[in-house]
Image (cartoon, rainbow, N blue to C red; front, side, top):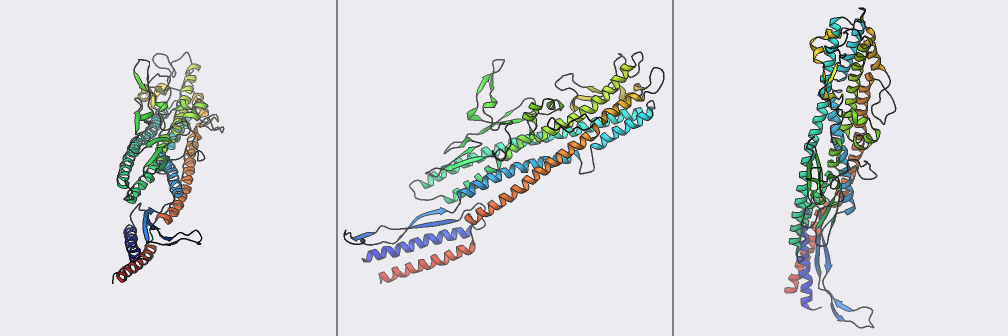
Length: 523
C-alpha cells in the first residue's frame, strides 16, 4: 500500500474519532435536557483503490482509504412516538372531563356539607307542617319562605353551572391560541432546518428535538397526523385537516355566538359565506367546524382524543333547560354527550317539576272553590307560587325564568287555605305532597327507571358521581398506558451516562490509535 494511502487511513480515523467524541460529549452534556434525543454517528468506508480487476481472480485486488463520517442521526422509534402522542391526547381528554366533574361536585356541595338537597328537604318539611295546620300564619309564612329559599339556591347552582361553561369557553380561546402558536413555531423550525441542511452540510438534530417537543404538546390538544419529507420538513394535520405545511399555517379561527358568547373553532381555509335572510354575508359554520359536536365519542373511532374536543364537549353549545329533555332524539344528538348541558337540563327539570307541582296544586284548589276569593288574586286569577319572568314559550318554567310571587312574599296569608264553608283545606297541600312522592318522573329520556321529586336530586347526584368515577377510571388507566409508553420511548431516545462513558473510552482509544499511526508514518 502506498504511503499516502496509509496516511489517509490514519487521518480518517483521527477525524472520525474526533466527530464521535464530540457527539458523545454532546449526549452526555444533555443527559437531563428535556426533549433531547440521543445522537449516534453512522460510519462508512471511503472509496477503494483497485490494484487488479482480473476476471479469473476470486476477488479484486484493492485497498481502502479508511473510514468516513456518514451522518449523525437521532435514535428514535417512530412507532413509539406516534403511540405516545395518541395516548397523551386521549389522557388529556379524560383529564378535562374528570376536572369538570370534580368542579361540578364542588358546586353542588355534596362533599363539603353545603347541600342543595337541604333546600329541597326544607321545602318538604314546610309542606308537612302546613298540612297539619293550613291556616296557621306561621306555617304559611314558612311555606312561602322555603319556596323562595329553594328557588334562590336552585338559581345559584344553575348559575354556577353556567359559570363553568363560561370558564370552559375562555379555555377554548386559550387552547386555540396555543394551537396556532405551536403551528407558527413548527413553520419557523421547518424553515431553519431547510436552511441548515441545504447542501447536506449539517444535520439539524437539536432543531428536530425542539420540533418533537412541540409535536408532543400539540398532540395533547387534539388528534394529529404528521410526516417528514426528504427536505426535513414536517407537515401536520390537525383533526384530519392540513394545519402545517413547509412554510404555511392554516390557522384555526373562532366564531362567537352573539347570544351565548360561546366560541366555535373553525378552519379559516374551509370557511364559506352565504347570504342570510337580510341579504348579508354570513359564515357557513357547519362546513368549516373543527369538530362536529354530534359525533359519537368512542375510543375505537379515536374521537376521545385532545383537550380541545373535551373542553368543547363538556361546555356544550348552549345553556340547556328542561325543554331539551322533551325530545329524546334531539337529547341524544345535542345534549347527552355534554357533561354540563346534560346536568343543566336534568337539574332544571327538577326545578320545573317542583314549581309546576306546587302551582298546579294551588290552581286546582282555587278552581274547586270558584265562588270565593280563596287562593285568588285581585283579578280573580288563581295564585301561583312561582311566576314567569318572561312569557316566551321557549323558556317556560325554567329556573332562570321564574320568581316567587311577590304578593305572597309580602302577605303569605293570601293563600288562606280555607274553604268557603270556613274549614281548613288540607287537600290542597296533600296534593302537593302526593305530587312530590308520585313515582312518575325520569331523569332523562334514556332512563326508564322512574323516581319521585324527593329522590330526583339524589338520582342526579348519583349520576354525576358515577360519571365522575367512570371518567376517573378511564383517566387512571390512560395515565398508566402513557407512563408505560413514555418509559419504552425513553429507553430508546434517552441518554445513559454509563453507556456514553463506554463510548467515550472506546472512541478515545480509537483516536489515540489513529494518532500513533500518523506519528509512525511521518517519522
